Image 1 (cartoon, rainbow, N blue to C red):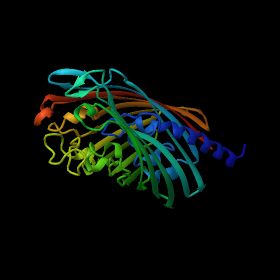
Image 2 (cartoon, rainbow, N blue to C red):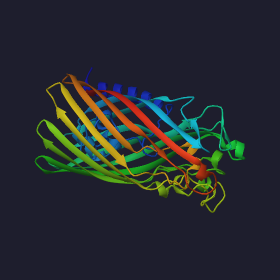
Image 3 (spheres, rainbow, N blue to C red):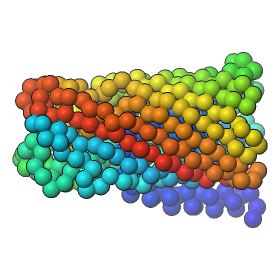
Image 4 (cartoon, rainbow, N blue to C red):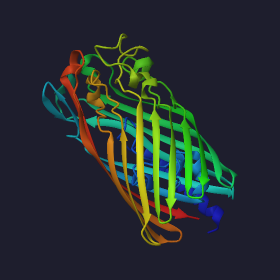
Length: 398
């Protein structure tokens, strides 16, 4: 099979798997975002702005895709969650009906020439919970599943021998399934929408062993979900937030050290950032109606990789963001208890042959609890979440 036919076969296969991503839930570790994109990145605390390692890198920084060559990566994460809420002092387990999730991810990159690449990186975002058949704070059997498939079509070019820039067209599909607010006289059920955005990136080797990177992603403008126009603030508008960051990677021979800092503007999405019930000034669905009270977040990522020998590379990392949950606005968090914010990670890659490699990563996000202290039901609602990730990917070079 010649190179052209191989690429066509890869694209067809990845397109099929991409459709599967939209059918799979993703429960994030920081808001609706996971701690990193790509199994190699996940094993290093999520770093990737200045350290592209596979064809999923375009989801973090499109400029890095020109550095990974012609390749394809197919990955899967197995995620176990421990989430829920304390209401009035009673613990309600948010994973009692489902606590194990399967999340695909994929990427393909093609070098048009030695200086230019075009690629596709597909990842999943989301958040959710699944309570048992109980009444929690007036919500009967509260369940939620917010899943978002984000595809970045990237074009990257090396503008000097040591610098590259990239642009990404970001296309997204999201689906929200929600049960529980109906017992309060509010909408429930499911709805979906599509949206688009733009990402930009730069990467440069400023010293022989030091690479810097910068990335920016606009808000993904999602279509309104009419089913929830009287529940979600701003007439059912649920966009993906704007975010930006910088990174550095230091090569010390067999060992690479990397760090990123990223800023996520959750408060700019009214349905996420508006104050919660009993605090918001508007009615549910209004522009100033109740939201989840999520605050803007700064995320720090640190990672190390060591090439043990020609076949084996080992990784470790740490990732931490500030708490996005506002303790005064915890009640709505019963259906989105995103309380965890720290991650310890391990990873490895085994080179099967020059054209194929297998990567694995594990991430532990310890359970954290946010105690509600706001007016109304917020003061009776504490939220908690912890997670374990086990990720696996197959990488192929062409």
